[in-house]
Length: 88
Image (tube, rainbow, N blue to C red; front, top):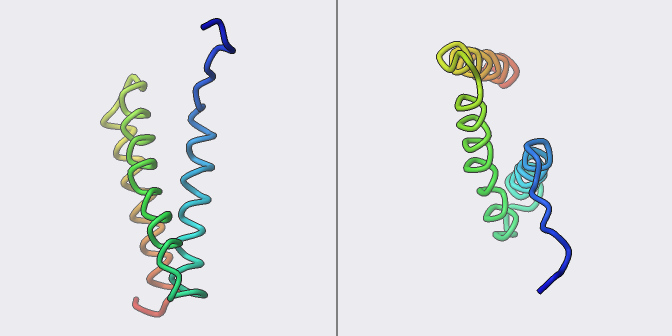
């Protein structure tokens, strides 16, 4: 079966797919709440981003520093969201 060789997805392509899925989820949540498939497709973003974080921590020399940086950015984004939404 001498077909074309399979090409694997790169990390950046995976992130773009996850970002598109998250965008569909947000559109479904805010603009089209009755369209369930947008929310279902959007739920694919979390496992893909989690895989990217796991892969990044596996490939670095300092996984603790990497995970601390990811956690710090998450907390910073959460604080910015709270300030923007008026919860803080």
